Image 1 (cartoon, helix red, strand yellow):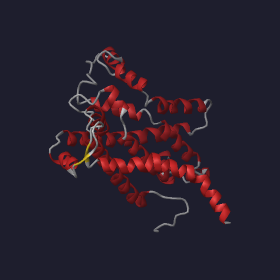
Image 2 (cartoon, rainbow, N blue to C red; image 1 turned 180 degrees about the horizontal axis):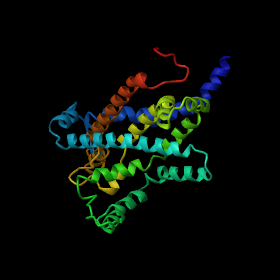
Image 3 (cartoon, helix red, strand yellow; image 1 turned 180 degrees about the vertical axis):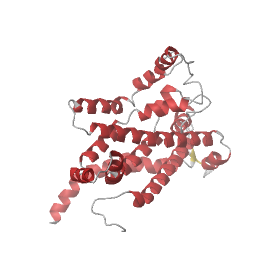
Image 4 (spheres, rainbow, N blue to C red; image 1 turned 30 degrees about the horizontal axis):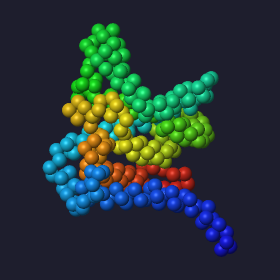
Amino acid sequence: MYENRKLGFMYVLPFVIGVALFKLFPFVMSFALSFTQYDLIEPPKYIGVENYREMFTTDKLFPKSLGVTLMFVALTVPLRLAAALFVAQILNFKLRGINFFRSAFYLPSILGGSIAVSILWRFIFSRNGLINQALIGLGFEPILWLADEQYSLWTIVLLNVWQFGSSMVIFLAALQNVPQSLYEAAAMDGAGKGTVFFRITVPLITPVIFFNLIMQTVHAFQEFNGPYMVTEGGPLHSTYLLSLYIYEQSFKLFNLGYGTALSWVLFALVAVLSAVAFYSSKYWVYYAGEKEGK
């Protein structure tokens, strides 16, 4: 028995070493560097909480970037989940060639985060791009999508909403696991499609909705390629997400200590929002076999 345990430990040892070296060690080191002044050249110099004090008192760009990030997440996550659930509901029907459409809708999730698609998105929304050419053809004035702070954030939001394929596949799997007998019983009772969807489908897939909510929230806070390649954080920092701010502080200004402090604030923000979501889940997430009123 003891030898079997020892053998099992030897099997998981490479995983433990990998987590310690590539996850735990950078995690601890980044927290330590957030209390230092470090420029990648000279050794880190301990300065206490000076980075955090500067961030919350004298740095005027931090609240702007934080506000843009929260707005981006608040717009992207609900729209992405709604689009994913809507398309999954359509693709749940048994139609000819449905597998082709499922693959086609998943494709943006593979390509959407690439640099090439971000550059393509920039050309589509440029002054003489495809969108403005269509507006001119319809008799409207062209819009400076990337140069007007009123519209620039929406172009980044639309790029991220377009990448709903991964959530769509998860929603589709959940929809296919809903018992057909419930739909048949609802049809016999004369329930409409809207009633069936909100009274049967949505409650049964709330665990999947919750999972996608957490995953897409974390992904939205990590977004970098889109705003970096399409708008470069402009105009007037209207798309200047915290991820861009961390990058520029760390690798353009070589202020790695301040950059790691920013990253830990971002981590704390994601952790708090995730904790709130987990706490609220007991009021709206329903698991199979769970007793009512538990």
